[in-house]
Image (tube, rainbow, N blue to C red; front, side):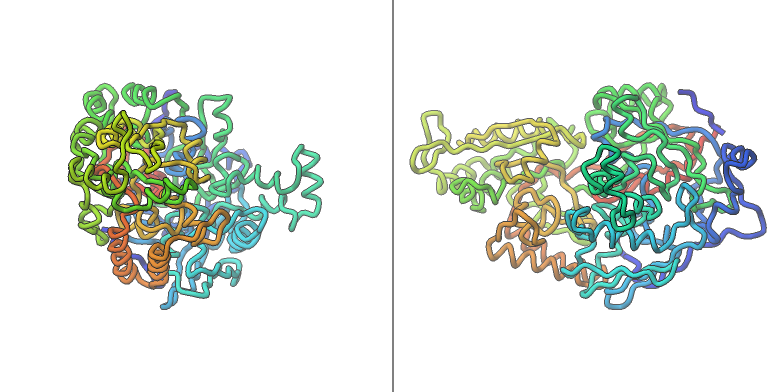
Length: 639
């Protein structure tokens, strides 16, 4: 479709000043497509659509011009996170593009007390949802009290709302002020809000829209649900809100505070080749010249069958700005050669990821004999020494990287050299020696067996994801293990099935992405200590810690480790959190829960040469919604 082109070191934990107000010496300007709607009487004037104090934003390079669309490639409905990562980042407070400071956003200002138990957010007077309805403290209180705390609607509070072990009280002070109060210090709360992930979507649930489906606000909701073919009001509400994270992704009717609003949602990809978002006429930001943002009229997400087709799209100039599913090592050479014909350049992606592949044995597997062996740290050390990481780096990752365990990246304030480098030396002799002390007997094929002569087997499950070639890595790894007498096999399965099996605690082992390599490890600590989220080596231990169904009490050493992380979350300042987290990592090195392959190298993406205000480099990865945190609302076509 032809276009019309017209240092992670601190967190602010004190009163943050309001964003600069747009000067009153000029009238605000708006996109021509909106001016036409104003003239037709379909929209109020721009001055009435903006809040009294819009967030004034200084573009990266220059004031832009209105018009045009931005094109992305999306791998179907399962690739829904692309929408969040491009148009869906508008929490109360945000990380700056450099990912080293938290700034006001939807909240005009915020205040945190010295103990980090009270967080007060001041909202913008006159701010509106995309349908023109006022955005107020009522929306945030509704999200928390009537959705997140509702026993039937929410399966439980996310980690960001469990600081200190007790859920906060959320109170409306007035229409423009809301307070979160914790019984115990929660120094990580502001970071959770700024990441806007894992159920922390406080600005995504307009009360005036969702209350009509809620039995506490609409006594006829159950009857209305059944008239529409639902079993109950609960089923209807869940359909309207999807999985309680960014409900607008699957339901374009949901009003938003985002730069763009979907007019063709993800559900259309089953019948259409595109999801389309159009500018939000009530968006709350302007540039420094008083132009209401965004500059671009539309975002277009074209569905493709696989990454190979997406690569062809990029080479043909059909993708304007993207790294997801494109910026992988295997594509780099051909994309480099295609820059001139595709009219694009590279940008650098400075990832917080610390590993190209984390292998986790299931330390809580139901099989008693297998669990005993998996929980033997010497067994895990032996398997680690059996892996030829340098060969994997050369074959799979084009020589980029170095042998690395599940450990933070060098140069970060939580770098731990012991954790990063221990047991990475390729030494099959040592591996055999250690395994002989655990499973000395072998069968006729040379594979190790239990003392009673029955086969010991290990299945490493892998799914193709994140462009990291997990199945290829897994094939090499099981070959190394077979060479030291471990009867290991690869099972390549769909990602959704992989998720089901790991959550059901039935898999032997799996390989996945190495998140949490920067200070984001304080939030995404899955590979370091099993307290929240996807610690695939011991999800039932996580459930025990969080008092959720399916919990299994961990060994005493693991419980002590979990308690250490709880102390990190209680620390009121980032400096104290880092100090305590470094102690946690020392114990992670001692426990050696999982093994890694290699330190992930810098990533890259492609961007059209004439896309104005596009970044040269992006900090991203893990919990950060990149590249949305670089402010895509400032992008524009230069000619």
